[in-house]
Length: 213
Ligand code: SAM
Image (cartoon, rainbow, N blue to C red):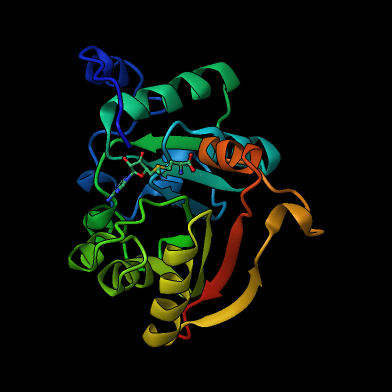
């Protein structure tokens, strides 16, 4: 995703420790403490401009949500949504979702969301896809036993690849949607990318899968 560089973004993120956590390693194993409750933790890797994670937090006050976004200039837009919504159950990490086990303890997370992840269509970039086996290993490590990954995309190639990657890893595929918006799925919170692609008439693919251990 090409993004306009915002030189002030890092400073703005640093000004809001109530939403943006910067001391990540010291939080390992203490995320529920930082939310001051014992509710389950759901994370979104690649949370972009934050519409999904903030919308989910508004819809589900009994779940703690953490959005993880690599690009500072994008994360700052998610922060704006958090400042507007003023919800106690959402936080933002401006970091690499490939390093999850550095800052989440084993079994600390209940669910991982991936939404419209970069497709990296070239075979030589397979390892960068957020559904590549090394990412799945990381998700499994930080999740409770039988933890689930919920994945949405408009990209048929990435969707097919991900179904294969999940099943080769030994994950159980629970449900697949080939046209989410035409289905009876309730409570869908749209992401910014989802709105854009759905407006062009593109079907949205969705899968729920869980680890077998
Ligand atoms: N999920 C959002 C949506 O649906 O509107 C954003 C989708 S955008 C195509 C993918 C986002 O994932 C980008 O903002 C990118 O910076 C972020 N991203 C890619 N790899 C990442 C990683 N390893 N860790 C955290 N964020 C990542």
